[in-house]
Image 1 (tube, rainbow, N blue to C red):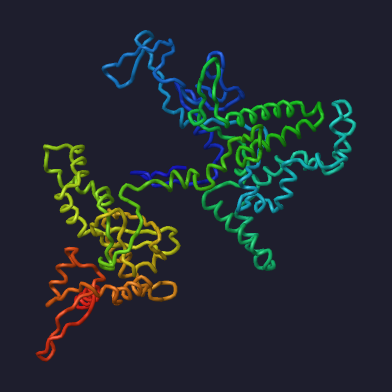
Image 2 (tube, helix red, strand yellow):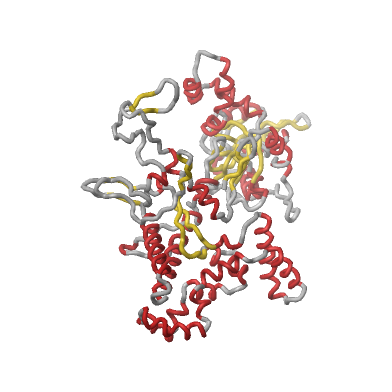
Length: 574
C-alpha cells in the first residue's frame, strides 16, 4: 500500500489486503458504468488470431488494451487534434487506444470457497494457529481433508453413486463428519465472528493464571491482537475470498513464428486455479444429488494450487517449477532487498583502503576519480554563471584531468564531511565521518590507528563513501559521527585509538641500521641537505650517512640512517 500526505509521497506499507480493496483496484469506470475485473475463463489468447479472449487472463476489457495507437476500424492512421493532446483516427474519428494501465490494472478470481493463505499458516508468526487456538498440524489435517484420504473406512465413498448416497446420509450425519466436510467454511466463520477486544481481554486474564510455558504463546497472541486492532485488520482476511491476478503487462506473451507463442509460467498456474475453481462450482451446484467425494477432491486441489502459487513445492517435467511469490520476497535478489533497499545512491562511491600514515587521524584520502564523480554537481554549479557553455560541455570539461579543476576540488573539500561505512555494519562505530583530502591513485587512504573501530585491516577491505547533502545531516556528521569523537567504545569503554602492529613494525624498521651498506657512505654537515636529497630521490630511506655533530667546541661525526633522521624530524614537529 502506498501512503500519501497532502503534499507528497511518504512511504510504503505492507498490510493484509481487504477483499473490497482488490475489487476497487480491479474495477474501472467506462461511460458511467463500473466494469469489475473478474476473470471467468482459463483461456489466454486465440492462437490463430493472436488476440486475447474475452473474460480470459489477457482480456482487454479487464487489463486495458493490448496494442497502442490502434483504432476500432484497425487502421493505424491518426491525426493530432489542434485543440487537445489526444490522438484521433482520420476515418472513424474516434480516440485511439492507449494501454497505460496494462502494467498496473489488477484482476481477480472469485473463489467458491475461502482458501487459507499459507503464509499465515506456516509463516514465522503462525497467525492462523494463534487466532484459532489450533495446532498447525491439525489445521493442515483440516484444510487438506486428510480425514477422507488417510481413513480406510471412508475410502468406500469413492465407489458410491448418487442413488446409494441417500442411504448412507444418515450414518454420516451421526458422526462428526460435517466439521471435516466443510472445514474451510467453518474456520472462516469462526474468524469472522471473532471479537478482537473480547479475545484480547480474555488472554490478558489468562496471563495471571497460566504457567510460564503457556505465557510465551499468550504474549505472542496479545501482540498480534493489538496489531490487528491498531491497523483495523479483520481476522477473516487471512482467508482468500478473492485471489488477485497480476496485471497482464507483468506476465506477457510473445509471438515467435508459425503460430508459436512464448507465455510466462505464472499464467499456467492461474489457468489451473480457474479450471479447478469452475469445476468446484459445478460440484457445489450438484451437491444434493451426487457423492461429496468429488467436491472434497476439488477443494483439496484448489488449496494445493494456491499454495504452489505462494510457496512452490511442485516440480514439473524437465525440473521446471511454477512461479511462486515467496521467491520474490526471499533472498539477496528479492524485490525489497534488490530493488527497493538496494538502489545505488548518486553521491556515493566504493574503493579498497590502503594505509597512509602521512594524513591526519580525522582525514581520509579520496582518489581523484571518486571525488570528481561525487562533487560533479557542485563543480557544475561553479560554472553556472558562464552562459557560453551548456551543461553537457561543462560535464565534459570537468571529466578532463585539468589542473584548475583540481584547485576547485581542493577548495570544495575543505568544508565538506564524508561518511565512511564498512560492511557489515554491526554497530554504530562502523559508520563515521571524516574530512576528505584529494590524493593520487585509486584507493582510499586510511589512517592506521582507525582500524580498531571499523574492525578493518589492509588486506583488501573495501569501504563505502557517502556525501551528506542536507544541513542537518552535515551538522550531525560533524557533531556525532566525527572520527575524533568516537575514540572510546560505547559497549565496553575501551580505547579504540591504540597502537597496532603496523606502527610497531614501522618504528622498528626505521630504527634499524643496515651495516651491510657501510661502503660509499656520504658525509653531511646539516640535516637540511639530507632532507633535500631524500625528497629528490637521491637518497634511500635505509642509506647510512655520517652527520656532523658539535659538542663543547668539539666536532664529531655520528653514523646514522636517513630513516632515523626523518623519524627525529616528525618527533620534533608533533
